[in-house]
Length: 196
Image (cartoon, rainbow, N blue to C red; front, side):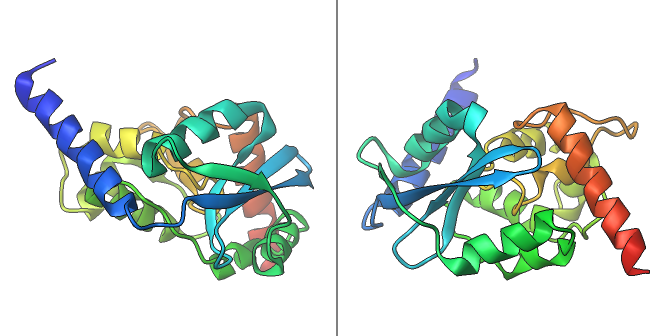
């Protein structure tokens, strides 16, 4: 690793930790049954979604939250607010446009947050490549960095990293597994077509 790369990573970590200072680091953790497994919902005291992952990837979710909020971040069992649960339940029942109602809050570097905001702009039922997202962000040669930011997304599904595919149209990695990615894309396309 070059010194410049190491410095960039160190500054990115410092940037993340600096912005997490003063943030209430106590979060609620709820569990919700879905057709593709149990989902983990992490939310803050103001009712904003801070994390979404699958129970078989809880260790990764905790690692990402630790990276964003520091070692003193605390997850306590709780019930996610209706403003989070109801749109998620509606999404899995076929009302696929409801995810946009969920208020999210993320931490991370400025570049990561820009990538995550771009993910939320991908229309339901559509896909984008890493390269097209990089171009949209004004950094056309940064598709690899977009991929890394995509992989560090703490709020899967709602910040729809499952809608990102390879340049050749292939399904590329998804933190929840390719079977879930395939199901989510098919679910969205099916219900989008049904809306006419």
